[in-house]
Length: 127
Image (cartoon, rainbow, N blue to C red; front, top):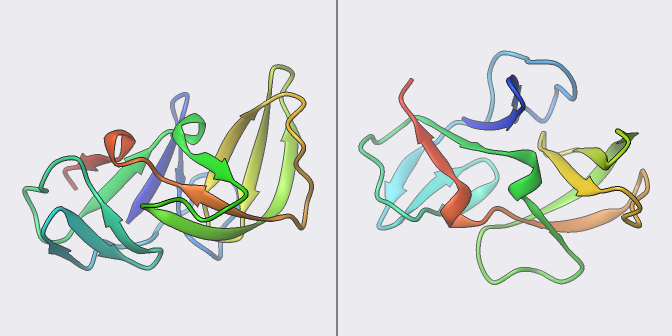
């Protein structure tokens, strides 16, 4: 499962749930070297997990939005919802991830973007 953490509330990466804290999510299916297999694809981690299946977490502001495919931990996503939060914009993507961008970022509903989930910001959680 991949979990987005956002100032105390949890957003589970579930392609069918786009708000709140739904149950379920993207399960880690196995380990391959420094990476894990998920429904989002292979994700490289900074550390080898202590488990074969479990949960990964990343804060929304740590996810990078890119115009071109990043070299690692790339996820292609469509922006389904944009919420202005004053000093930031929260974007909810069809892949079940929430991304936080600085206010004024050129983002609109329907944009298809590349997301990078930096290995140094992916956290392994004990279930």
